[in-house]
Length: 457
Ligand code: DAH
Image 1 (cartoon, rainbow, N blue to C red):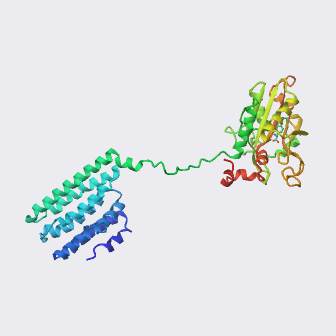
Image 2 (spheres, rainbow, N blue to C red):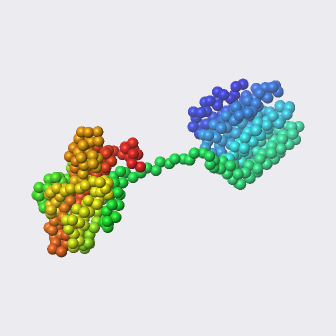
Image 3 (cartoon, rainbow, N blue to C red):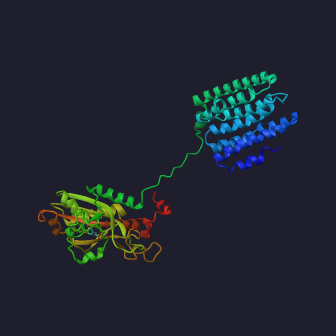
């Protein structure tokens, strides 16, 4: 009578409604099997196969049923089916002569384990319902199937066993509830072992570009500059015209750039203002001076965009810090002094600066600032001999453009060019970061490769 293994195996594949049906069919079959157990030994065998031990079919089926049911009700119903089969055969028909406690023991063991394993309120509630739910619990099932159906001579003994089991399990449930309520188990489980190594949580770090922004901002903070930020989408007026770059001026060629295709304005009468991604942070010079009277001392960190093909030193998006100082008595000396101070703070006190004449439409005179190569000490020669790889033997490295603000620019912002003077500069951050940290490919800033990012915690 192998009523167990084959059947239990097949259950794994069933979904829960089908499983429910299968359990009912199986319970019917159990009755047949029980009917074949005529001798006391066969009955014993039937019982131990059905209820005994954790390998017993009652256990394996019940756990499967419970896992599939997701809730207790119809799973309990399945259990009642198992209780019904032996009851019909051995109690109702009164054929079993000896020792009804053999039916109670497996149930008792089963419930004891379930209660002991109830480590939280959810599991406990489930275990308690399985025992004492009136419609579907084991307790009422035993009452219905076993007690009521026991033959008259066995009734007393079955009743007594029933009461003992009930009392025993109810005591256990009460005890268990006490433990759960006092949180004793949870406390024991949650107590901290201070000797264990801690959990290391990775916190990430700011991108190197952000760090360099911060370094530069700190230097300019220390000499009285403040930070302003502006839009990355600009009008040609701010990006070009107000910076003294009229339409068709040849320097626009350099900045051949990204214009935005806009939907037509709602009234369709006016053409939409053309907009573009700013090609430099210089438009914020204009926006700042429009908003405030001199003195002005600001730096403008931000992203800028140009139609450059990506290579080791070019990217269509990169970063700049613009600087602007305007006041009534700013001289070229203030200008070079400020730049020198910045460069020495950034690269170290031993570097020297120099400037060369250059051209920008919004500065006059315009210069290009160089720094003496911080890597070869401005000698052009590498430590081991040969040309320094950083400055290519030139001893100087080109840093950024700058100049005294062109008086024409003041005209656009209603400053009196006769009274004020000032200087401006535009620093390429990516280039500076590459120089300072020995990075030879600008693209790596945009690739989010953690192996790179991790080197700058
Ligand atoms: N806007 C220039 C560029 O992106 C850089 C620049 C040069 C800015 C000179 C300035 C300046 O403020 O004075 O190429």
